Length: 171
Image (tube, rainbow, N blue to C red):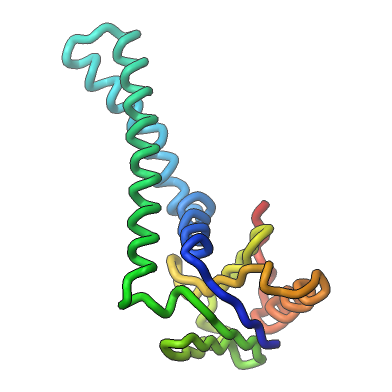
């Protein structure tokens, strides 16, 4: 099966966000940060002599602000990284062919082949299929590039048949 697609900065950001919030080891770090930062700031404020109520309110407020800042900082870095000329292969037009031997991907910059045994897992959301080739690297297939639902079903069946593992579905 041959798939033609156009990967945008937004697609690439959504993949990185998916990894941050959905993959177990990265989700644990993010949750620790979201919970730990306000708690840590509250304790620091209490240690320097502020009242508990003040420490908790200011600690939580600063923690939330820092987490929001960190989210947008990560997004900006990911978008900037993906747009750099050294990483030109990540964005733009891609042609992917799913075969019995593996995955062949062609971009304007070059081409690559991955055997099925080099694919640890395949994950799917309502908008994308991610064919992982490492814990942080995956082929992104926007489901919008498939012309109809039957083509999407055919792709899922083909991936499960050749990969010999179920696709992990995220809501």
